[in-house]
Length: 141
Image 1 (cartoon, rainbow, N blue to C red):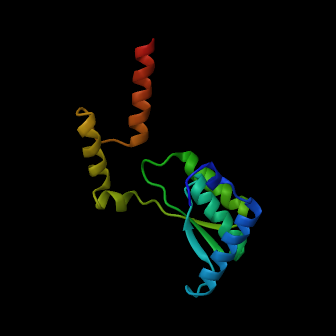
Image 2 (image 1 turned 180 degrees about the vertical axis):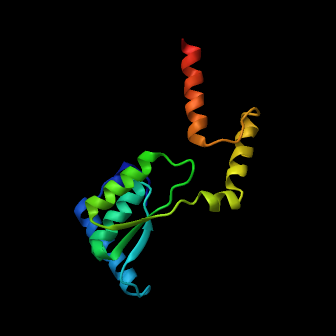
Image 3 (image 1 turned 90 degrees about the vertical axis):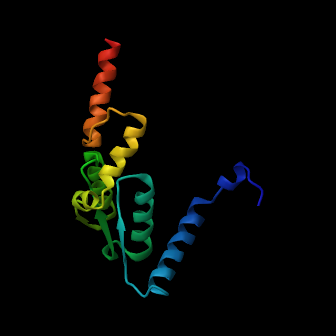
């Protein structure tokens, strides 16, 4: 297939039908399951997946898993819950901060940032971004 803007031309209704059919066939067939558990972040990708699964399997057969961590925006959880409520799917929330800390993820993140910004200190990324924005505003004043 030649790459061009035509690859983005789809029939939305036909595409949704094909995707829901594929999900239903895969889950009920080779996977031999009644439903699905999927992570919902509040973003577009997980929202589309949740909507397709709810349509394919029935909302009662879909569980949305919210996995916030110390750097998660409160908007993410709010949007994920709003989506789940709209789709009528159940949710379960579990803070994964302790697991990420135990795996050393935050240390690796801070080390990576320090390669670019040597004075960076370990802190919540939201706090870091807030400080950076305040600093930028001070410089403009």
